[in-house]
Image (cartoon, rainbow, N blue to C red; front, side, top):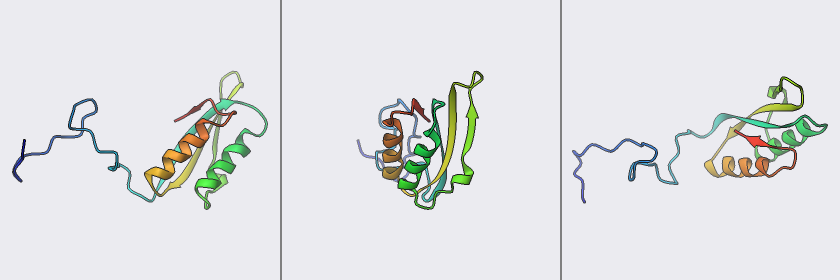
Amino acid sequence: MTTSPDTPKTPNIIGVPGSEPSRQESLIEYPSQFPIKVMGQKVDGMVAAITAIAHQFDPAFDATTIELRESKAGNYLGVTITVTATSREQLDELYRTLSTHPMVKVVL
C-alpha cells in the first residue's frame, strides 16, 4: 500500500499494528534531565551503589539531587536519581545495570 503526501499519518497507538514508533524513534529529546526510581530493601550501601552507577552513565551526576523515601514499615527504600540522558542507548544500559544489581528489586 502506498500513501500520498496528503494521507494523514496514523497516530502512534500502542498495540495497533503499524502505529508503533520504530526502535530508532524516541519521545525524549536529548539531552534532558531524566528521573529514575530505584527500589530495594533498605540496606547499608544501597544509596552509594546507585550513586556509583549513576556516575558511570552521567559523569556530571549531582548526588545532592537524590531523593529518598522509606516504606511505611521502613524495610524498603525508594531512591530517585535524576540523570542527564544523552541517548536511548545510554538509558537502556543504565536501566539494565540498575536492574541487575543485587540490591535492587525494581527500577521505574
